[in-house]
Image 1 (cartoon, rainbow, N blue to C red):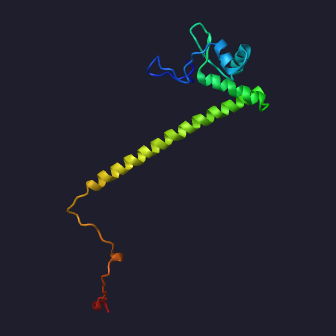
Image 2: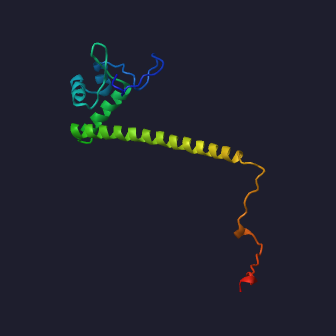
Image 3: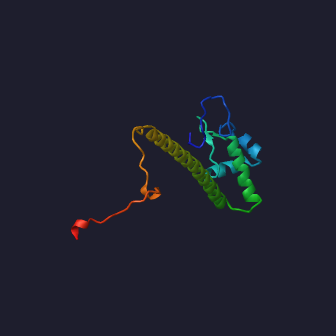
Length: 151
C-alpha cells in the first residue's frame, strides 16, 4: 500500500479509498481512455494502488480525481503540470488542515488537564489557614507617631 489508501478494520468494508476498479472500469467511470489513465499514473497525477500482479486498482476517490483532472484540463485549459501542482497543493492543504485539528485537540486537552490540575491544587489547600487580606482594600486607619526619644 502506498499510504494514500487507508485500510479499515473490516476487510470487507468498502470505502471511497478501497481500490476495487480495474483500469478498464475506471476508464469507463471517468470517461477517459485507458491510455490516458496510464499516462496520468506515469505523470503522478492519479496514482492507483497495485494488485498482487501489478495491475492497477482504482478507488472511488481515484475516479473522482480523474474526473477533476479532466475538468481542469478541458474546461479550465490548465496543462498537466499545472494540474499536478494543484493536486499537490490541495493535498498539502488537506494535510495541514488535519494537523491544525490535531493541534487544536491537543491544546484543548492540555487546557482541560490544566483546569483539572488547578482544581486539585485548590482542593488541597489547608482549611485551617486564614486567607491573606490585602491592606490596600482595608478601611483601617493606622496612626504613626515618631519616637520622641530620639530628639
